[in-house]
Image (cartoon, rainbow, N blue to C red; front, side):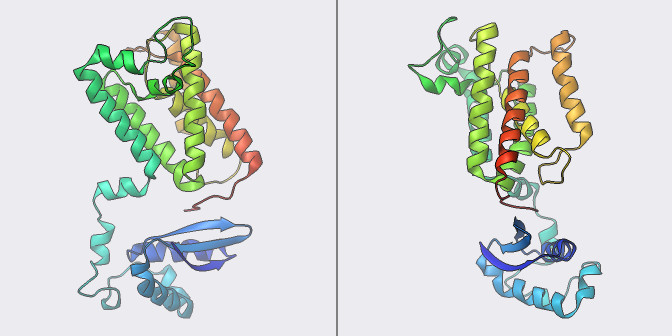
Length: 283
């Protein structure tokens, strides 16, 4: 990425960001101290991006106008701004995630297919332990592998959706390392607690999802961050957690994994908030 400019004016930076995005320029904004920095993702757009920035500096009223298609922003080698704004949904989804988000989702989908073809062998290979009273310290990967097992289509769709939505935001905002640490911490915590309470025959990414939820909740509590979640979403997920303990749901629920994941995510959110790492991407 190339840094185009920096500014202390958040409103002007927001408008400039939106203006460039409307013209198909792949940019993002990061925060460094009191400065907001505008970054260009692809160097092939550098000349056009700098030209548009100069136009906005010379004519600030451009930032308040409705986007218009003009000859200066098109040539035979560049698609129109209209076509860029109507990019395929697959490209939009990819833009909302990082490589770890995609790899974990792909592994979950692959394991789901394998589990449906060879259920007994897959369960035996990936469940947390082959015993009811011994954690797998001799096979440490088993502390993680249960998160990739899903037993119904609804199960995997629900979990991968929330993983992509929450995990993608965390990875794009704080970086891959933080998401990986949170994935391992919440996943292992949820798996171990579920095993200790109910034995080894379980699977799913729900504990991780609740870990991400708790992390975003605490990290963004009473402050504006890119990880802020609508209160209605938090209430829905907490209500789903409570309903799992009532037995009224039509699916088998790993309640202890959900609760352990949520609490571990809240703890991680508190710690990371105290460490206050520089956000990777503001918007």
